[in-house]
Length: 169
Image (tube, rainbow, N blue to C red; front, top):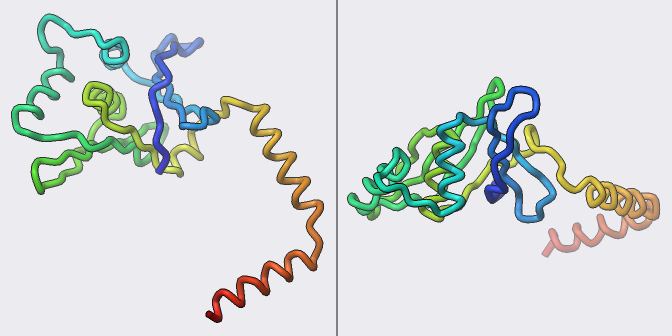
């Protein structure tokens, strides 16, 4: 799994639909997730640390968890099926730990309000992320190509012999 942070909310140029953007720690990959208008407002409110005069839905959920001494350990965006992301809340109450199905947008809104980490399965990042830093990606590819082009068969044999010695011990 890869821990990600909310980079912000954007609007899709064609549909004008809100998108929450998650970024990995290296800021090399971004994961765009289309969300609804209400969830976008809720996420923006949490990012700006806005406290409404009366609790909105996500605030109410956090209040309920607090009242029942439950903690949101983390959220996990675990799959992508037919262009739909799926997430779970990992909630703990004492020794009891539960996974609760949730829309990613709701899970993210709750994670922001409780300062809980956002994790995304590597397969989801591989399938749906977009590169943010193409120059760094290209530099990494060039360095790898250079490394491979300078390898000789003897280098590979030496490395293989080293592993065999380790396994024998």
